[in-house]
Amino acid sequence: MTVDLAALTDADAHDVVDSILAASDEELLAALAGDDVRGEAFRSLLSRLHEYAVPERLAGVRGDVRIELVRRDRVLEAETIRIADGAVVLLEQPQGAPDVVLRTSLLRFVRIVSGERNAGLEYLRGALDIEGRRRPRAGRRRHLRGAGQPGRGRRTP
Image (cartoon, rainbow, N blue to C red; front, side):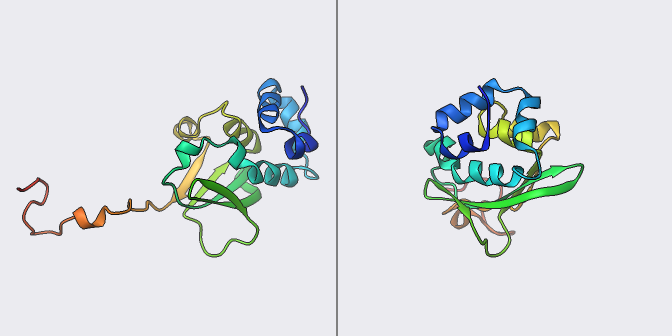
């Protein structure tokens, strides 16, 4: 199978993943890394991310994620997606700072989206940079106690 821009845009999501999994790194880079197609390929994958995502894993997740494709510490492409209410949407004109910024290469990004690579493991390897702020879970603040209040560090009846 070959990977091309038309396949990323028009083919069934399962077929896209199958073609990515069947392609070598060299084939993927030859098809997608050129300056003339990289941005469009990146946006095409992001705009269809909801088709690749596991809905149960998106439940309760909310925030804006900026994804930057880099080569030798230089940002080649950057786009922002919004995850909310189980949906993933590519933002045309993001407003404000994102909650999280992910930085990786085009090849790693494609391999992560296809499920071939795991983002957590790529982060531990140093192949995926993550910057952002941790958001408190809904309803957690009422359970926190300030310094000097009874029960700090232990549960009280």
